[in-house]
Every structure is written in structure tokens, then in C-alpha cells.
Image (cartoon, rainbow, N blue to C red; front, side):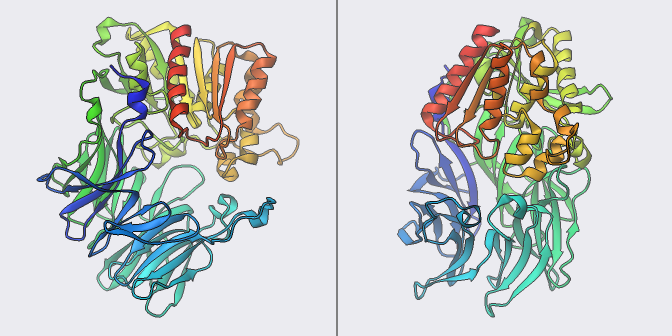
Length: 586
């Protein structure tokens, strides 16, 4: 029997890292119940049972040892190596040094002064021979990559630690570790991340992931170090989601491919394809390690030669072995304008379509640049399998604006959130009603983040839903552009900002709050008190509007939580509260 405790206390693998000889994969295993992540080790060929050598997170290999973070210190399996007086956000073990990124040790001022309260995370070096720590880069460093020969670093920096505007104007540079010389390679595209090195003949290149425009998803940019020319090498049809450096040859990129996941080599195209959802990858160029989940199998580490079927080498969630899962079905249908769409349908355990119609809960995804892949749909947010275990069918649509269908598909929501993407969702619901799967009198909707916006938008556009959940959602795009972490991105989605004159503003036409007087559906509003991505004021605004118009709703705030709910007690409450909400109203 599936319980909230079983979901919250389950084990989830992440951060695979391959040893230098390609024989071992280290990976991180998290569980809310335990609190402290664990480091696990498995043979790449699956010949040995996985073992846990230590507790910690972010495993990294050098030629001689395995490293990881724990309690603010960099460790090896033999014990702590060194620490720093503030959080270490990234580190790379090298031959004669360990480079790491961390803020200055000085405490922040008690009085919050905007220009002084953001401390830069600088690039530093720990000398293995002397134990001395020196600062290599003074600016705020967001990512770093070591060249395969350990002779240089690629460094992504922001002018200040503030996401807005510095995340819109990152810069890429190369630091020669022998001479100390640093060469600026220029400004990158928006929100650049994941720099990797590769060599084409005698020429070194740095590639990175970034957003070419404010909306439209990620692309891979390549920069020859000699010319410093930034070139977008991503085909219009590809949606890269991870970039990984190989020991030899061009980098590899993980690509969202409809409901599945592919692996491409930069400049060469697809080299592997996996049914389901892979969301982490490591490779030496020949062997690949991925974290993969399928429709009825939770995330596990899989390894193998590139292009060959991978072998599962971990079993991180044996607690699910005796659970009966709802059947997960892949959907393919056409939007009202003929655009090809996909999604998933999860039915209650032991049921088929012939047992319908069911109460149906639609789960719009976040992002909007995200997707539902045909992976294991279970998590702390009221997920498809959790709702299915309570007797509901769950519809997981991939509407326009998401991953997996190319740049144009992803960019379609620019200044148009809630328009075609809402039509895409409603078309899927209508199809399931027409096919006898969904009971039109028992429809619900539940979403988190951008999905929370879609839920609020849905109940403002139609009265067909009998219950809704708005989790960490946006009700006013003008306010989101003014107070969210990345205002210009929010303005690109909502279409305008409040300082563009007296209006009417584009964002008012796309904000659920503008149509609050039309809402009759009961809404469960849930938010983290310390959310800086979508501030709590969005939930408060929606709550006050619903109260003003006499709409049934509950307003729940989890103290100390950000955009994701992390506390075990809060996750348990959210799962149970949502189950009870939809059970009563559907």
C-alpha cells in the first residue's frame, strides 16, 4: 500500500560520477527522513553489489581518490581534507590542487543593505602540498570546468551575485593555471551554465548551456578559445537539458526527446536513446552513467558503453517493490490548431479504461520550460501515482512552452502564457472525456510553480473544475516581474512590466487575478513562506481576492520553506491535505 511516509522517506539517486579508469560509478542518495545524503559506489558492469563508503554529497573523482562534501568540508573516503568558513558550492579535484567556489568567510551585515548583502562566491585553490588556500578569481563565480590536462580552467562569472541583472549578462573566461593569466572570452547568452572543455585537433574549445532568448529553452554554445566566437550549435528541433565533458572527443549532451531521452555528441547527432526520463549523466567518452526512471521503475543508476543498452547497477528504492502502481499510458493527440502534442495518463491501480469514467485530475507541469517524460511519476508534490492510489485518474499534459519538441514549441508562450498552452490542456481533457476515461462532473486541476499559475488561470477561465490546487503559483505577472528572482524573464512571459506607463498592460490580460470575480471553483492555495522564486505575496493576493468574492478556499503557508517544500512534516502534510481536498470535492 502506498503511503505518504513511503513517498517522503524513499531513496533517490543523483550526481553520478565515473572513476578515472571507468570501472566505478559514485552517486549521491538522498532521503528526507535521514537528512544527510549518502555516497554510494557501484561497479559499472554491475558485477558487484553497490556499497555505501560514506555519508556526504556531490561525489567527484581524481586519478587517485573519490572526493565529496560533508559538513562544509571536502572529504575523501579516508576522512576530511579541508574546510572553509562558508558553503562550498562547487569543487574540482586536480593533480596538485583542489579548486573550489565559496563566499568569503566574513559574516553578512546584520542590517540588510542591498548592495552589501550579496557576497560574491569566489574561485579559490587549495594546494595539496602546502595546505595553502589562495583566491584565483575575485568576481562572483557561478560555474567552473577543468581542462582535461589540468592546465586551465573555464570560468563563468557574474558582475554581482544577483540573478537580476547579472544572470542575464554572464561572462566566460579561461584561466591558465601555470601562468595565472586570465583571458576574457566575452559575454555569454542568458543564464549560462555547465561549461565543458573539448579539443578539435590542436584547438581547445569551451562549450556551455544557455538560453538564447528570454523564452524558448536552452541551447549549446561552442567557443573556440583562439577566436572567442560564441556559436549556437543546437538544431531547432533539439532540447538539450544537460552537458557533460568527455575525456576525449566532443562533449555529450542529454536531450529531451518527446516523452523520452536521447544522448547526442556535439556536432555529430544522436548516439544513444532511452525510453523514459534520464536527468543526470556522466561519461568519459566511451562509458556513460545515467540516472534513469521508467513508467513503473523509480530512478536508478544505469551504466554501459555509449550506444549499447545500459545495465542497472543500483537498487535505491527497494521499499517500492510490493506496491501496485497505476497503469501509465503514453498519449499523443492534436491541438486545436493541429500541433502535435503528447502527455501521460495514469489510471488507478488495477483499473483499465473500461472501468471509467474516473474523476480526473490534470497536473500542468512547472517551468514553463519543463516536461513530463515517461518516467516514474511519484514525488512530494501530489503526483500522478499518489492521486491514482486514491482512485483518481491523472492527466499529465505537455503543453506548448515545454521541453522535448524544439525551440519554436518552447518559445510559443512568450507574452502568451495561459493562451495556447491552456487550449492544449483543455483539448486533452476534452479528448479523455469523449473517450469515456474522465467524468466531466468530477474534474480537478493541480499544479506547482508555473503549473500553479495554470491552475489559477484555469479556474478563472472555466467553471468545469470542481476542485483546484495552486501551489507556489503566480496570479499576477506584473507583480512577479517586479518581485521574482528573474524579473526580465517573468516580463517576457507575462508580456510587460508595471512601469511601462498607466496601461492597459499586457500582463493584466494574462494574470488570473484580473479574472478573480469569475472564479467559483474551490481552491487549495499552498506556498512556502520564504519562497523568493515566486514570492508569498502571489498567494496572499489570490487568497484576498477569493475571500473578497466569497470563493471557498484554504490558504496554507509552510514556514521556512522556499519554492520547493523540503521539510518532512510539511511534505507529509501536503500529500495528505491534497488527497483529502480532492477526495471531498471530487
